[in-house]
Image (cartoon, rainbow, N blue to C red; front, side, top):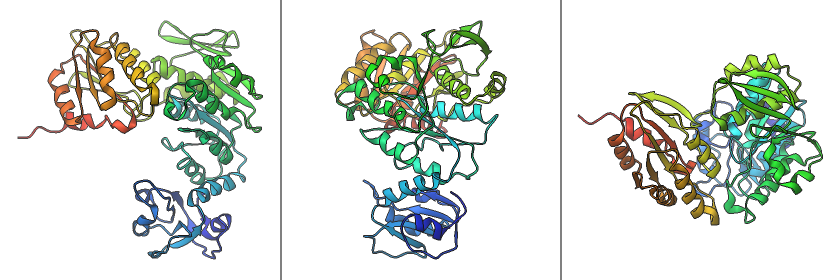
Length: 451
């Protein structure tokens, strides 16, 4: 937590230190260190955190957790040597959390984690003092930072919990087990690490429900298809759906608004700011959690106009009569389909242009998944531009419909081609895995023309 004497932090790390300096924040990225900050010098594949100690000092940091193997200069920092820096980071977050009385809500899923986390936080802020995961700090490296940088007087912690390989969820649960666990949806994200496909992913993500501390399990009703995983859940099960009325919470459209059924009884009408089905999925999950937190319907509804989407999640803006949708933060087959299916209709004379990048970490499912997305896009896009090696198969699937399609390996060239086909009334979608960094296409597209 913030503003704790450095000697107290050191004691939790098993290091003797008598400094009374106050720790103001905790970081693993040297460029984010604030005055009074504590830096964890994590080893990395591309860079070693110990190489950035001088920058940490320059930015006002007061101390760094380093490996006992480090023999370099301290640059004026208080160095706290430990056996494993990552274990020190995770252990410190776990220990500090033990002093908190806050209720913990954990959110996982193959898509929509960050949006659902944000929506839950916004709804609950009407009634509780909430602290939530910063940005998408949801991994074994970044997850502890949310816990360490909290103020300490929260009533509710809304924590995003991600996994990319077997065992990841268990490591996060060791740091912070939720009282209420939420699973948005199961898809093929990170499936390269799971030879058993969706069944294995469901088992790993479903483990968020299995900690003895977890009393309530909130999940998409379709999760019941994973029978064995659901049977293993002893927490109270609560489901939500837009397709199945037998779900505990069911949302259905009605004259531009949405009706909410709670356990088979029509109870409320909402007018959410976003009407796309995949965003309504996140909204419904958040409403379900708010009800588990004993919020009244009017309390929930008062917060609905305040809901906002995180950056690069179906983020829409208009420029020169063209609607652009920046959904470039990440992608897997399910989120690709959701984005394409929810494209708004172009204005008269306009067309729908899909700019799609490759989807990473799909392993043996990669070829067919990309091909299938190309075929799926036939129904929703008039023109396709693809980017990255894996996206070749998207273009291949789309070309079966004999619609215009081009493939690129350079974002500047893609942007040039996109600019050449744009006209007023068009709708343009950009979506791909984070590795693709498709948002750079906008930088090239909107850069000033040379005189």
